[in-house]
Amino acid sequence: METCMSIVVGILFAIGTYLILSKTLLRIILGTSIIGHGVNLLILTMGGLKKGGPPILGLQGITFTDPLPQALVLTAIVINFATTALFLVLSYRTYRVLGTDDLEQLRGYENE
Amino acid sequence: MNNLIILPVIIPIITGMVLVIFRNNIWLHRFLSLLATVLIGIVSVLLLEQIRTKGIQILCLGGWEAPFGITLVADMLAVLLVLVTAIVTFCCLCYAFSSIGAERERHYFYSFCLFLIAGVNGAFLTGDIFNMFVCFEVMLVASYVLISLGGSRIQLRESAKYILINMISSFLFLVAIAFLYSMTGTLNMADLSVRVAEAGQGGLMTAVSLLFLFVFSLKAGLFLFFWLPGSYSVPPTAIAAIFAALLTKVGIYAIIRLFSLVFYHDPGVTHLFIGILAAASMVLGAMGAVAYWDIKRIITYTVVVGVGFVLAGFASFSLVGIRGSVYYLIHDMVVKALIFLIGGTVIHLTGTGKLREMSGLIRMYPKLGWMFFIAALSVSGIPPLSGFIGKIFITEGTFQSGYYWLGGIGLITSLMVLYSVMKIFMNVFWGYTNLTEDMQKGTTRGLLLPMAILTLLTIALGLGTEGIHEYVDFAVEGLMNPNLYIDAVLGFKGQ
Image 1: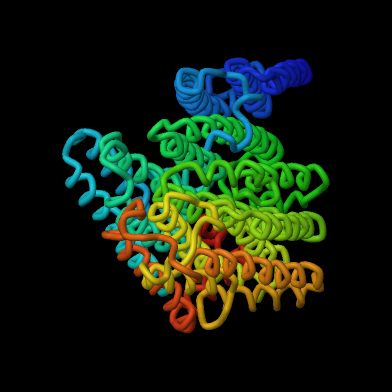
Image 2 (image 1 turned 135 degrees about the horizontal axis):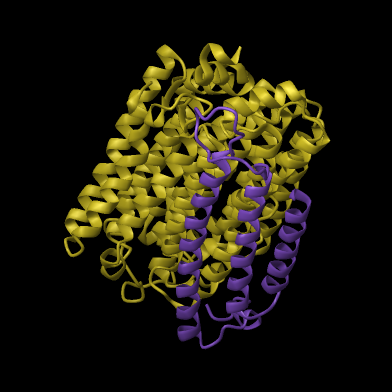
């Protein structure tokens, strides 16, 4: 199960990296978002995937799941959501003000 | 348990949120944000005294005991940095009053500054690696807003890159945390230290530590500083000064904390690697500072040199070298804020950043000129100013550990930095005055006081080294001896 998940994480990272390497700002944001999902999946996988009961102490005889990776993922998702939203708004504003979302045209110091 | 520790984090958050409600009352914004920094300063002085008399203070949030809940740990290094953060922010806010402009003030500039400070203080004080990630994000989201606040063309262009770089490094931070958790099963830094020591720092653990080093190098501008000159030269002066003084230092602090507390078993690989990166960033930063003829570019490159220097001392991993790093870290926060404020003022007065278009400013602004002179000497480490003591200890430390090349590169780059700041001084302040009364773009009214405070501070830190000597030694002792930290956090369970 962990091996399978690791491959999925790898695929997500590959797609995200490919998108980030493109020139359009929107594609780059989608790429960061996909890498974010890959990271979340990685955190869950690293906690160990096992069939178990709920993460509650005091239940005897049942293996219980490690609750910590879930708490971490929850926090990571919220932060990822906030930064992605901010990035989207900023890139829209960049497009409106600069008239382009092509990173090739956003380089150099000539607009100073 | 000591409830004071949470105050440097929640004072700015609560004040920032209150300020959002009173949007149109700018004077209230100014007063409350200054008050918040003063309160943080007072709290950190109190904490310093408690740590000096009673040792490292901890706070288990929500009453959850150390390895399970989030622990805040106030050791000497963290609280010293919190204190300097409060002082530097105070001065930058004072500078912002008469320079940032009503438009930015009304769009929550002070709130975001305070959120940034909350993130910085949280990252200094936390004892939990995931909580450190969260504090980094609080700090970074505030910095994303501050760097793009105002929305001028160049700001928008640079902020897109800045956000992208930092998002990617945050993802890698999470990846590193995930690997570390899968290997050790804990996130508390004291507990991590114990478990890494038990299991031994094998090849896999060293690989994870290098992933952490990569993440923090990106944030600190250690070798991976390609984003830094662009991002730090676009926001208004007060914001750029806060960034230069604080943001890279959080990355440096994280490197020092992790590689002195958790990953200290294999210095032949990790610390040597830090040393190589430090040498590279000193050389490249100094080359940038020498090559450019634009005042903002030159001073942003001196930030990179400063980062390299602090970590060169740390890489030597000797008592003297780390003592030098702590002195230099404190000095660097103060003097980088100062030199950014002065550089921004010069651009504000003349309307240009190009050295060749300026001349003879010292006739009209003698105070500004002499403050820049002092700051320039301090940046390059001339005695008796504050940079000297750090440089001498760092150099001694690298020589003691046998890294002669590292100490040598540090000394040579110091000369290059001296040349580049003197280049600014001679071109901008000396020579014939080509600036007449009607040509100047602004005044220094209200701008001199914060710079004077920082100048006095850099002189005082240089002359009064003996005064903070005891605190710095305490901090160094904590860094060289991880057991002090572990015992304070885990109590008897750690032994």
